[in-house]
Amino acid sequence: VQFKDKAIHRILSGLTSMALKIFLEYFKSASIINKLGRHFHKSKASAKLPELETTERINKYVYRVMGLNPGPHTLQGTNTYLILSNETEGSHILLDTGEDWSSKKYVDLLFNTVFPITATKSLSKIILTHGHDDHIGGVRRILTELSQRNMLPLPTVYKRYISHGKYPAKDIKYSHIVDKDIFPIDPNTNLTAIYTPGHTDDHVAFLFTHIPHENSISNTNVSLSTSNAINNAIFTGDCVLGCGTTVFDDLYEYMQSLTTLRNIITNTNIIGNHSNHNLPYNPNNPLWSIYPGHGPVIADGLTKIDEYISHRTQREQQILQVLQDS
Image (tube, rainbow, N blue to C red; front, side, top):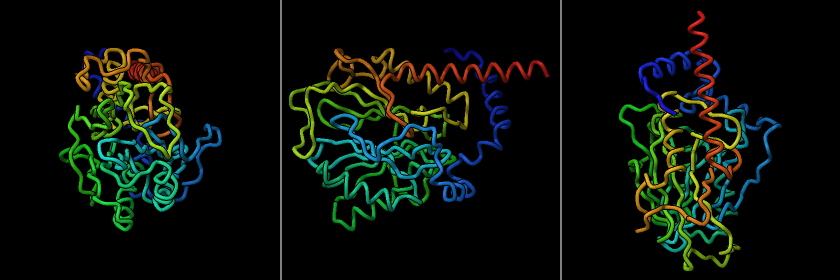
């Protein structure tokens, strides 16, 4: 997908945003009105959505942990992900943290159910995909709980910093995420940050790339089958969801980000070397999955991204047609 005239698409983005502003304003997690709306509608996710387990082992490295904050714009709830790392034994990585109003229940699930079965002794990192409250709202309670349980040292919190950005994550001390930053999981497995603005100005997706090795992570407390294939995956945050479509602050940037993710899947060389290998994927199992911020895991990430690009392109054409006819 090519966007030859950036100015036209920025104008279109503005017009689209204006037309939908009334309907989409409650999606803005940073707004007080939205937070109140979340509180009063927090248990009213659509009955038509597929049911998801509160916890799910996606592969031998990754657990999906529900944020327990269902709602009309969080769907079944926010997906957070515990990533088992061998960088330091028992010290793992948490991707996103759920929402403030549901954080007490979420922290109980995380610490009393998930941590014991994954032998989690501490967290080395908390990585945030973006600054919406349903992704960063649990940070303070998690840090407090870690401290109270003496699960030290406390993790470093990572988030993309945008000067004068819309989602500054106030009262949270964090380190800046640079595009293409690599967060090692073990010698054969990495998370790579990919800056994907559009949904928000600070949005970052993360590539999960794995090359099998006989000494990969093992854990006696978790049933881990080394014969299970591990797909490459993208933690897409809210750039691509497991159900329906997402909203955006900037249409042009959002479409560029979708194209970036598509190009990564179809031409994985563009993200550089991985653990001294020329290609950052398992050549025997090249399928890329999507681990979304909301909704179920998508096995075929390329098809889903193409659906998103097609859907947004059709909407652009419809709006342009209306403008031409008016």
